[in-house]
View 1 (cartoon, helix red, strand yellow):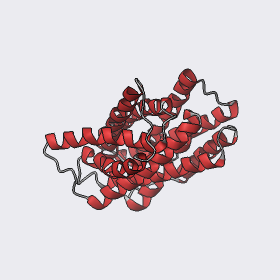
View 2 (cartoon, rainbow, N blue to C red):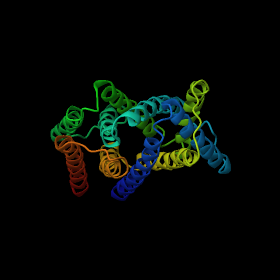
View 3 (cartoon, helix red, strand yellow):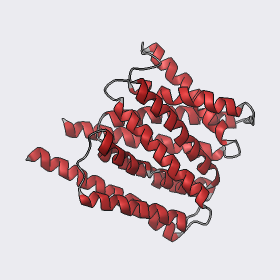
View 4 (cartoon, helix red, strand yellow):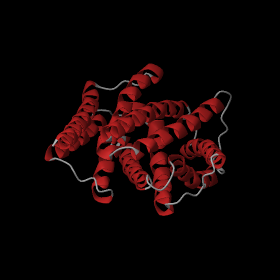
Length: 290
């Protein structure tokens, strides 16, 4: 039963990763728009969709576990704004890899706030190696200065808190009810800011903005389902599949090339978290057989 639950969590996470990649590609195509406007456009579309779904199914818009829902909304907004800003100015693969430190921070937070403490020393080594890989991506790409690197790390840390809050709500709130709180916070904050800096999208840019909102909200719900259905230290590393997708589409659509050493750093990150996942799943299997 636990094994099938974990497999379902991984499947939801992989779906979320693919959808997030699609949304990020749309954001990259709209990079000339201000960051706060991009966050607002994504959030207002997602808010309308999630609110309509909750009302249709008879759920409260404000949920049950409001303390953690509010934390999820605040830190989700911070994380998204920081990530979108890096996405506008550095290669999508690099922005994705830096932001994808969030699974590491999530697992570390889950150890102390969600009771998931079963980690082996070798897993700490894998996490350290993954961080070294991210530093290599930064160090061997001259387009990434310390400002954008720091924003990426801030984004990852904020996202980790948001993921922890999502796990805290898994027994009290519906996944869509968890997602809507991000938009309940983001819309008034970024909307107020955007009112003074608005740059109107033109033509097909409106379709791209709509796609960002739709893909993102489905991805958020998928990720929330994933975190409802398994442990963070098993599920979160699968986010790193997004780094491969980001590199491939960044090269194909935006001609964003990375150096050999930067690519090696990406491979180091992906290899480390994959190895960590295999160790964790092997330990869980042995525990069931014991």
